[in-house]
Each structure stands twice: as C-alpha cells, then as structure tokens.
Length: 180
Image 1 (spheres, one colour):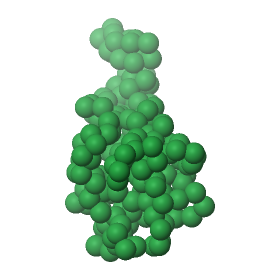
Image 2 (cartoon, helix red, strand yellow):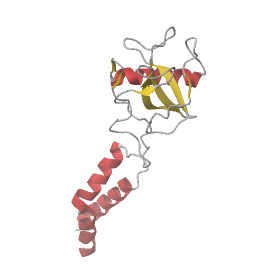
Image 3 (tube, one colour):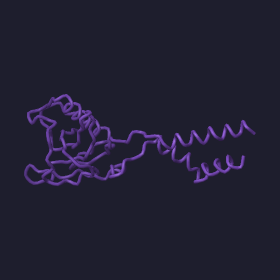
Image 4 (cartoon, one colour):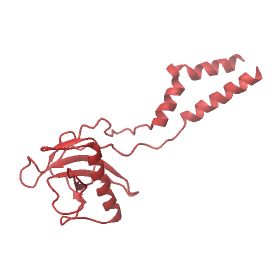
C-alpha cells in the first residue's frame, strides 16, 4: 500500500508542477496568404517578406531608393489586429525584394527591442487613391490573430488538458490519498 501511496503522491506532484508551468507566450502572429489587387501571395511569401524586412531593420540596413524597411504611419487607418508602430516592406510575386522597383504591395510588421518582428497585415496601392494604401484581402482575417489575452503554447494546452481529464483527475487522486 505504501508503494501505491508514494506513486499517487508523485503523480499529484507531477500534475501540480505541470499546472504551474510558466511557458513562453506565442509572440509571432502567423502570416496568412493574402490577395493584393490581382496578386496572390502564399503564407510563405508573406512570411519571407516579413523576415527579410525584419532582418534588415534589426541590422539597421535598408534596400532600394525608398530605404525599405521604413516606418509606416498608417494614415489610412488600416484595420491591423495589432498596435504599431509599424514598418513596411515590399512583397513581390517571385522573389524577396532586394532593391529596384518595389511594386504596389507591402507587408507591415511591428518590431521589438529583442529583434523579433510580428506580422501586422498587408496593403497595396492598387485600388487606392493617390499614394495611399488599402488592405489586401485576407490580411486582417487571420485565424490566430492575437487578442488582448496571450495565447497558450501547445505545452500549456497539453498540460491543462491532462490535468483536467474531464475535471476529475486531480479530485480522484486527492480522494484516494485521503482514503489511504
């Protein structure tokens, strides 16, 4: 009986430890595929543009005659799901922008002091008046867009579901221990 009680105590301790895990919060908003005018960009193309813009920003470098990435002030008040300030960087169909004509389409991202960047959305000059931008289709309807509450990591979700097991795992173990 002592062996069973020790095993149950260890199991309860393991469940408690898993419940108190302070895992990292997912900070990177996943880029989705977007349509800017007649241009369709896959999520990989969007992420590649954000990654290149982020890398240049972190190193203090720019490319092209318009010095990308550069600040995007969002005077058009595009409905990005995360707050700025924003940087903008061109997105092209067949390659990552390295200079020359930037085309009409851009990705917007935010930056942090630790060098990480978060995709905010995509915009285009196509269909906008003057030199303004309009949102690309799909750029603000990402299924995992951040909310005010941090998302849990997969590890936290797994720990929470194993702890609850229908809401009975912890109470059953506690009841067995008390009965011993």
